[in-house]
Image 1 (cartoon, one colour):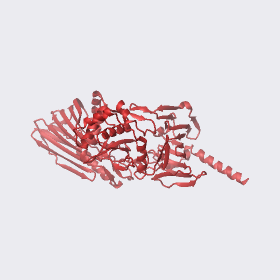
Image 2 (cartoon, rainbow, N blue to C red):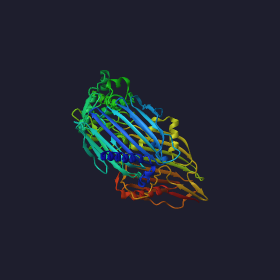
Image 3 (cartoon, one colour):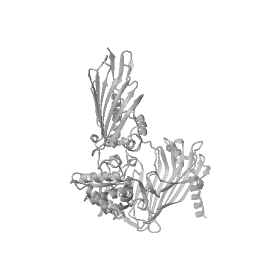
Image 4 (cartoon, one colour):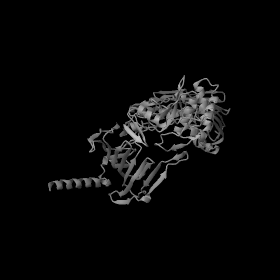
Length: 636
């Protein structure tokens, strides 16, 4: 009798705790501060049955405090031929925990991920969303269960995935069967894993996160991975579609990818002869690579193909030769085959691509790659070819895949190497402006802007992806002068190993300068102003992170033709501002009716202590003030 009472008491307490997570009133006050949502309960259970099959179940309960949290009333789950959604349910509650609505099958949409660049794609997703509620707070509950048959990938647990989101309780459970070992890496976790034996001789792994207050991302903060609690997991042995592999080190991944794609780099004999003739008079490896790369860009186009073994096995080079298209794997493999035909050795290189994407975890080998390049060792240098690009010069990788580790694919097992890093002196913007002013302050201006590398990348999409009229609209939004007419323009790519673009503009500007009585107030810089940054409103917590976009050098030379009857009321003193973050200089000279203003800014990326943020704010404030400088001319 006593045992029964104990069990009943436990069940009653458990039921009360369960009910509490649907009541907004039970949220601790500390978890509502600076929060739009509160994760009341989030449990991820990953149960590995064998090297080739697992089940994942996610049960989440989130209380939404205001309209900025409404996006969490929706859930999306992806699947493909190697995974299946076995359960997707949801319940909507009011602030008092009363049920408002339960998801029906008709509330769940099923979509293909097909896009214009996806020629073949077996990836789909299910989406469910509760309607917008008239009052706050309210709570949403979702349960998602999937079966997985692509165990190259194990889940990454990020329990606090959003800014302005607090966490009351979150649990991550992994169960491994006997004979299989889990590999994991903990980041920013307050505690470590709890281990226990499973009934079948396997192992249970459990991580917990409790009462984590909401955080607000600080400007210029390091990537979220460095701040968010997370657990990365990976297998030691896996199987997918009959292919078995080990995953203990980077060489294992390289060997598996090599085996997966071995023998798919053969091209037809007539194509082999064609590329041999194309490079017959070229003596250097770099010269051969450049010709083959141009041939690739002229003869093929990129499409996304997400079929087969998780999208990791390439289309055969022979098929690309016939169809003239392929995804990153296929075009890289095809280019490798073309180079091999002329005696140049090249290796595929797996990379975690994306502008601003964090690098792979070098001490945690896993399949956290989403793209592939081609690495070509040469006599002078190592070139990395972006085989999906129709316009980049050979060897340029930009911020999309630059300055990060890539895994070389070799028969014996490859290694991690780094892609190029672009310095400030590589990313230049040189602008020359000739301006003719009238007494009324109106002006005509001819502008020529030359950009290289990362600064040139701003022009790639409008140059190659927009029509002439669309380019004009893009420029009208980009030009920061208040009132102007764009009389003519051109944007052209400059040939050469360094990617560069030249933009020319012809403008008619109303009130470039401001007349006042006998004076004319002339702003010296209207097109290249570098604004201030937001000051800290509370003590800075994170380091100051200036990414690749802060490696640049700008120079502006602006020549004004001043109306002849005007003379300067004062002269502008030369100005130099130096800081650990960069350097700024500006000076103006006057010769007759010509005013020449020269401005230079050099910035560099880096990681600085949190205590340096006030200095960063001060530096940017000084630069912004200098960029608003003007000269006053008085009529004789």
